[in-house]
Image 1: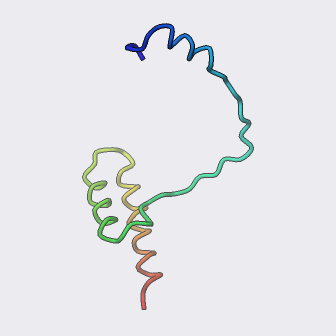
Image 2: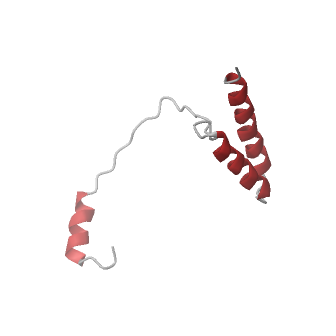
Length: 76
């Protein structure tokens, strides 16, 4: 906002209102490409396997497990 006129930014600052929202529950959800077709999940696994990040291998295992579970669920 450095390029905005100063009077404009001062008016905006005057309109800022802070609020607090109490959090009563926090729910997490695992997203490991379950909604993707198997070829996309295979690609995710391959890319994660090449990463040098500490948890990439663990994440690849989660995606691999979801892929195996999906194939099991759809087996004839």
